[in-house]
Image (cartoon, rainbow, N blue to C red; front, side):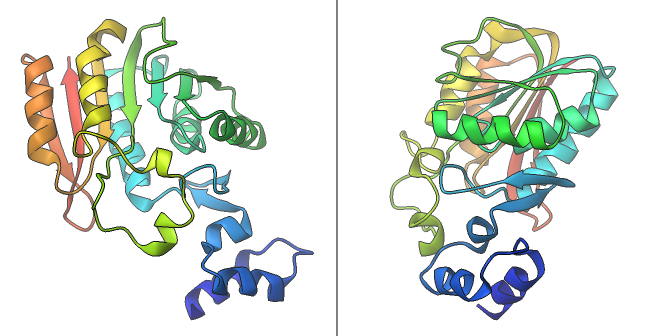
Length: 240
């Protein structure tokens, strides 16, 4: 609590009532929602309870993906961000690759409104639109990136997350694997000849998702990677 109060003192917007903000904190609301925005990869991203609060692991996903893109492509590529939420991944990648076309999709209209606002505030041109995974997708991409819902019912989750952040963006059926199965099964239809698929995963899902990836991409280079805490949190599928 003490650290969160210090965070409020540092980042609460001018004119906001600190005492009211602390009361919200005491009632179990995340400090990021109280402040109303977070710093993600150097970009200020608006957040509220319609979108997940961006985590450091997702910044790592952006960083690792950008390195792979630079190795395989020029700046001018097509990128699809599935389950964009606040738009933080799309915005970060558009800033890194300004000449690329970046599209962000989500099933939540409320999340998409926030993503569009964030793109405007960060002065980037991104196409955000509603789609249930690939349901409204007609283009082909060089890179598909996603941090989809991956918790299964019964997984431990802190009360502050469970009670505030949107369950639509947290939980998935089929033991948390539903979205990975659909993305990897259908992705070939929407990829160019050379491509990168970049996924953030739950720390105990590596083996299951590797099996799915190997089923649908038997000839690609499939890599698992760890986050800074040495947990298995990323899978990359690369076709050169």
